[in-house]
Length: 491
Image (cartoon, rainbow, N blue to C red):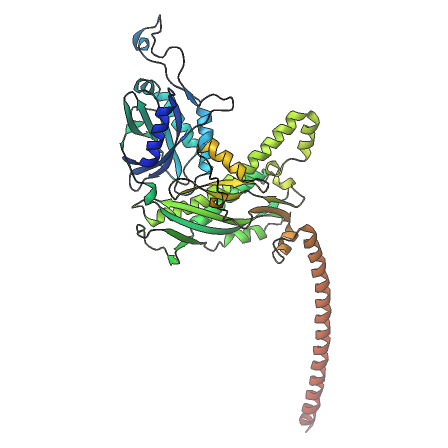
C-alpha cells in the first residue's frame, strides 16, 4: 500500500503555474510516475494535460447551470449540493492508453489529477473515482498485482495539493479514497538508467484449417507474444557484464548495460515439428532497445523486471499500432462504397486476416522505436512506420504529452538499426530460409530449393561411385585372403 508520495518539484511547480495562468474553472489530466509496492512509496514525475476531444470540447468542464444553486421542489441535502464536474471518462482513458505506449520501463500512468475547487471536488467523488478506474484498465501495469492509483487534487480555493490513494479493484466505498503523505523533492535526478538491446526471433506454425486453431492474425500473434513473455520471465541478467545473483540496491551512478540470457526451451520446437498439419510458419524477428528507470532504494531485480516488461509492452504496442491502422483503412474503405466493402472481404489487411487463410507469402514491417528527450536526463519513446518522418513525433509529443519536441533532431535517438519485421512463408520455404540470408525473398528461396535439389543429385552420384569402388576393393582383398588360406587347409 502506497503511504507516501514524492513529486518532482521542478515539473509540478511548472504545472501549478500553468494551471493558475490558464484561468480555467476545472481541468483533468494524467499523472506519470511509479508506484513501488516494496517501498510503500509513490513517485510522481510529471502531470500531463488531457487534450480536447475530437469535437474540440475539453475533457473536464463545469456545468453552466446549477453550480451552487438550489433545486426547487427537491428535499433534503440535494438543495445545497453543487453540481458535479463533467468528465469525458472514455476520452481520458484513451489518452492514458496512448501515453502509456510512449513511456519506457519503470514509468507508468499512475493516476489522474483534478484542478477544481474544494466544493466541486467533493461533489464529484463518484465520477472522479470512475475515471481513475477506467484509466487503470486502459493503462495497466505489466504483471503487477497493484490495484492502487493516485488521485491528486490541486485546489485553488484554498490553494493546496492533496494526494489520495485509490483502490480500483473494487466498488467505491468510504475507504476507496485514502489520503497519503505528499511532498515535493528531487526525483528525476536520482533515477538509475538501465539499457538493454534485445534481439529476438519468434517462430510459430500456421496450421491447416481447423476449428480449434482458427484465429485472426492479431489474436495468434498476441498469444505468442504472451508465451514469449513467460519464456522471458525466466531469463537471467547480466549488468555491466556481471551476473545478477543478489537482490541488492543499485549503488553505482550512470547508465547500466543489461544483457538477458534466455533459458533453453525444450518443448516448443518439438511441439511445432511434431504437427502433421503445419501449412506454414510465421517468423517474427527484430531488435528492441529497452530502457528502464530505477528509483532510489529499489532493488536491482526491479530494474530487470521493468526491462522485461518494457520489451513485452513494446512488442504489444507495435502490434496494436499496425492493427489500429488496418482498422482505419478498413473502415474508410467500407465508408467509401459498397464495392470497396466487397473487395475488402476478399483482400483484408493482414492484421485482420484469419491466419489459416493467409496462403501467400508476405512480409510486414513493424514500427521502429525512437527515443525522445523528455525531462532531466529521462527519455520517452514513440514508434515510426517506415514512411513516417520526425514531423509525426512532433505532433504526438504536442498532442499526447503536452510538450514541444526538440528542434534539434540530432538529440532524437534511433537505436534500433535492425528492422523489426514479420514474415509468413510456407513450411519448407521457412526451413530453407534458415540456411539462407535474412534478406532473401520468396523467389530466391525457390531458386535455392532447385539448386539444392541439383546438389542432392550430384551428391547421390558421388556416393554411388564411392560404393562401387569400395565393393570392388573388398572383393579383391577377399580373393587374396582365400588364396592364402586354402593351401594351408589342404596341407
